[in-house]
Image (cartoon, rainbow, N blue to C red; front, side, top):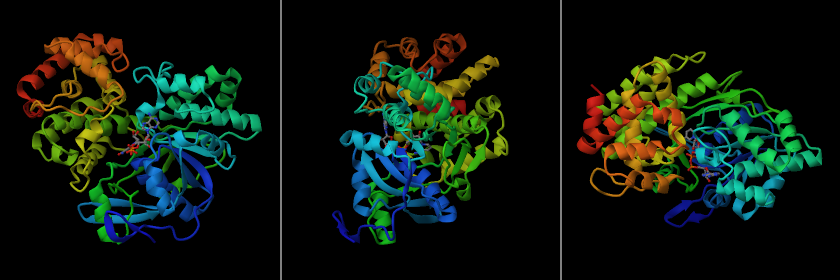
Length: 484
Ligand code: NAD
């Protein structure tokens, strides 16, 4: 064991025993994958065996490789609750590749028949689609690059198609593509961007993928904030070793998966995963109840000066606002999934939000709102309008997002808005001085707002009213009003 600079006297975590042989290749080994997919896989292998070790591929930065490689790719997943920490050492990952440094090595690894599943947690923007339509954005710079340079891709779709092309040429069987991102019908979306991309490369390849490659949908749930230096130090003090790749998450977890795999899968059910024929109802419940209120609380909570979701719902107005959203605007739009009770589900969500040990920052959840709003909030608004209800609470959340992407908080300080459309959103917000003009300019961004929704007079009016209230009275007062 070596010692770690910055954390004196603590040896670096190391693997004991052999790493498992590869069966899965995962794109996007961020905090969530390490708190979720890798933990389920570790537990499934421990109980039921199988060569399901994971080759992790970062499509962007080398950070995770640099954290994991010096500790033989083992790391600690810490379940944190007010009762304390439950650390668990996870050994499912056997190597990490960094795609921008080694495109050919990544394609070769994906083309290896030992890889039977390619899973991914690449964030919503990693799909290079148009959030309002779900179609591949053929003008996306990564897609135009990958179509012009298929041997050195940048996008997930570019790598998947290059690897499947090679497998088909080699006579190897295909792999299953398993999307684990927070997107509705994530399997169908992954399939549609991969097929649209393949169609542009070679229509015969697209036909082969369409016939041979399953894209099961999944619903994934475990709140996992970004790891902080404080988390690493606390683990070093409690566990006696330094682990730069550790992840901290809530104890709760839920994984619902469609059971359609080309060449087998780990026995994830041994770790509690639910296998179902159709995941859609679970996905809708989770996206609208959890992610929808998470985003609403993130924008309005940030504007009101709250740093975390737990801080935000500790305020009675914000927790009542959130409960009103569930009762009056969200739950009436969703069918109850088999085995679930929506009222119990939402009550449990509030308990999870209140966990003060989980420091989930409003700023982190507020990131990439242009990619998240359609599936988290706008679909729910559309369903309410179709039922002749104007969901004013969710319209306040949309107005909160509009205030947020304007880039200036309620004290006049600038907001670090992280979003692929950040510049356009800011320009739209700056293009007018009055609430009507700002809202109109933002509603005209078709990647976010379906034109039919943007044109709905009830929706427009409710958003303008909420935006005006936010501008005049601020977020805390607006939420207090909505919580009555
Ligand atoms: P993270 O920031 O730790 O990791 C994000 C990963 O996505 C990184 O590997 C990054 O390189 C990759 N990525 C970012 N932009 C990309 C792009 N344009 N193309 C390809 N790859 C890209 O975030 P995380 O907490 O691991 O969350 C990742 C995703 O997991 C979320 O977007 C969400 O869909 C899903 N998820 C997260 C949570 C959570 O609580 N964190 C819960 C459920 C689901």
